[in-house]
Image 1 (cartoon, protein in one colour):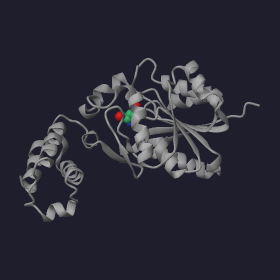
Image 2 (cartoon, helix red, strand yellow):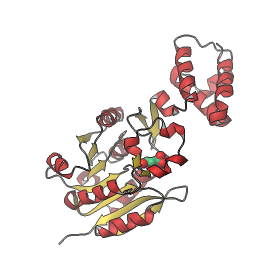
Image 3 (spheres, protein in one colour):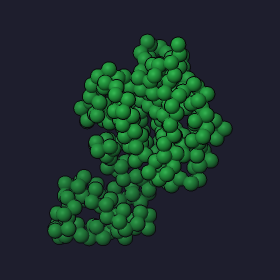
Image 4 (cartoon, helix red, strand yellow):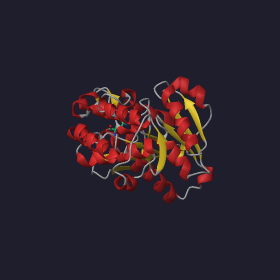
Length: 294
Ligand code: GLN
């Protein structure tokens, strides 16, 4: 089949779901991935013939996309904060708002004048490892730890650490199991604790699209409506023992729960609490400093 005809087929099959410009960029991504053809070459060679086995992979991708499978899972990869990441349905697809979190952490650290070589940083619920790996990449001297309850997620985040040549200590553990965690963390303490825990309330599901609902791991996304801050409470509890005095806690949050998050952090005695909006003007990041206990 000629590439031009294939491109037309993609548009006719997928435009209803994705819209024309999104289909064009999906097609470019697939051509790069399966055919190693760049966008320009594609336009210059409309008669290029695509044969087996590549054509079979592209048809399989078309079918997945018709079923709303996210392009990142179809390709098995994505980009986050300028770095390559492998993804599969065991991990959440890294989001642009989480890039803003990483950016905020890096700029906060620059401002505080901490020496990266002395920093130890823990990412709670690392998933694909996007936060931990990006921090490790930009703070090569820091000691980075990443925790997750999911074996599948840890396997993926380890792959991403080696893909980006960074050194991270991975810990399998459940932030909701304080005692189990005590045994694993021992006497480590951290200067910075970061987390993007599950925060979407079940009642918000009706606003979500099938690409998220049917494919992304619910374990990483959803919380019960009657206890939406479950993971944030656990993170705060954890800081009591494991965040150094003067250390900071930085988390991505549910846009509707900014005020409750401020209250939670002040209830735990955090100072200099900052609530930060994302590029869409929604409350998305919270930061607090652990007050000195003596
Ligand atoms: N921002 C993600 C979404 O809206 C949710 C991420 C999370 O629950 N931590 O799909």
